[in-house]
Structures are given as structure tokens and as C-alpha cells.
Length: 88
Image (tube, rainbow, N blue to C red; front, side, top):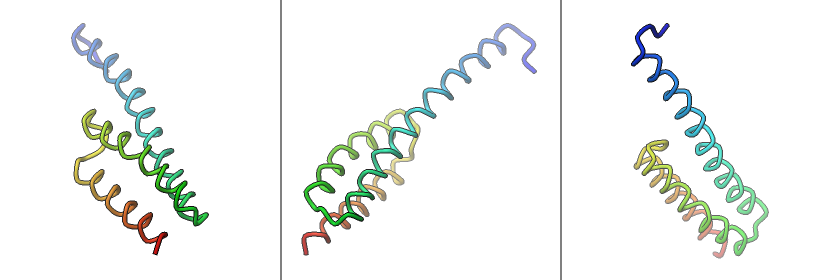
């Protein structure tokens, strides 16, 4: 348990950041799920729109340190390929 004033403050800050990061991660997952659902429904226009909405969320997760850069790039790439495949 935190004993010094500094360690107590760091513990409070860590809790606050944890809540913020959890909300951000949840928001990213929600956007990704919407893309997945649009792909599953077979509606290419809806899937493309959902992907356009999800990409900035993923990029924001990278800049905030919630998601690794390569993970976000991989997810965007794979989703874009699946959306593109709907039109074929």
C-alpha cells in the first residue's frame, strides 16, 4: 500500500488514468464491433461508413497509448480488406 504522499498521489492518478483508458478502449471496441456487424450484414455502404468512423478512433487510441501502433494498423488493414471484398 502507498505510504508516502507522493506514492499516494501516484496511486490516485493511476486510478484516474485507468478509468479514462478503460473508457477509450471500450469506445474503440464498440466502433470495431459496428464495422464487424456491418460486414456480417453484407451492406457495403454501411460497412464503409462504419470503417471511416472507426479509423480515427483507433488512431486516437494509438496517440493516447491505449493501443499499440502495429495493432491498430493491423486491425485497420484487415477490416479495410474485408470491406473491400464485399464489393467484389
